[in-house]
Amino acid sequence: MTDASPDTRADAVRRRIGPHDVAVVVPDRSDRAAVEAILGGFPRIGEGAAGEATYALRRDAAGGWEFWSGGTRTHQATTLEDGLLALEWQVVTDLLARTDDRFHLHGAALADPSGSLSVLVLGESGVGKTTVALALIARGFRPFTDDVILLDPESLAPSTFERAFHVDATTRTLVNGLPHDPAWEVPGVPGGYFLPATWAREPLPVRAVIVPKARDHARPLLVGLPIAEAATTILGFSGSLEHAPALSLRTAARLTASAPCYALYAGPLAPTAQFLAEAVEGLRAG
Image (cartoon, rainbow, N blue to C red; front, side, top):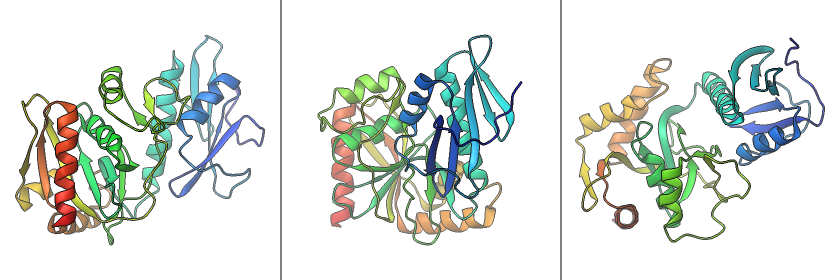
């Protein structure tokens, strides 16, 4: 079995992901197009960047795919979709392991349409946070990130992290049914992904934290959480609490002191998005 040693051929997809440079060797042209598409939000880099992390996604003899990280095969997949998921998971996991100066949360971060504040939407997979985030994007919010929030512990502003959104068929149907700018999505992204056409770039402090709880209410409702419960809730979605407890506790305390935290009981998607946009506008105005 050959290894995944670094190479400088044209079959490497090179991107700056967060603060790190990554090269993914993909010999098959159609597979490489899929990798280029899901990483299309991240800036391109040239060959030979110092400290570049190297990966490879290759077809194997059995007709499946194998993923390599630093010369070691770490995943095997029967479909390209699973190979892409393995690629994303490993690259993001490695990034987070090398990032110890940010507060990591599981959720989406968005800039409001006025560009004056940011909002976090936190939640476990399947609770509807990505659907809510996409519905707000349809109303003019701009994303900093989905799924991986890296928050500056001093400014309390999220970093821009241009990872493609993961969307299932149900979410895709729901958000496509909302009024939105026809150019809100980058075309040509593989099924199961959504890549926003524009991203938030200017650092904006968080002014609200929203935690989706349910999606079957007749009308949307926000319930404010007491500060102690808010801090516990936020830390429950932290990916840095274990390896950076002091930073995590300090940042969560500052965040709850400056940004109200709400449980969201969502109704139908369109009125829920309107309700949240109006609530955020109220925060901005007052």
